[in-house]
Image (tube, rainbow, N blue to C red; front, side, top):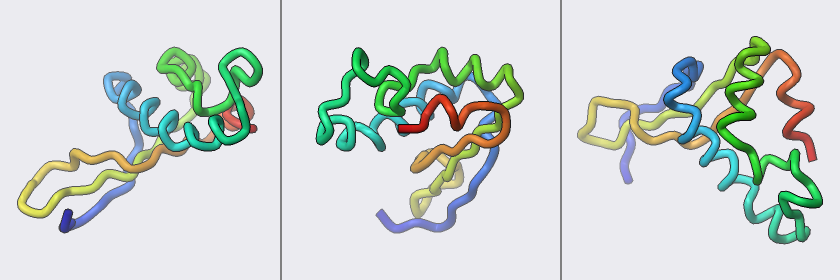
Length: 96
């Protein structure tokens, strides 16, 4: 898919948390599978991240950022590739 541009922006709308959580879970899914991690034996691994967790950390003044891409011929950033948090205590919850 040819791209025109990309941008990194803060994710401030809780309505975007579901898509963000999906990107994070998918990014860590293969690691969890490779090492036999499950929600039971490693509940804080990012492969099992929930929207609830994102909402809770956001209320702790954690900031989330995403990389958004614009497919060629479009004018809206509609493809999320990555998410990152900063501040607060979020990093402790997703360490592995």
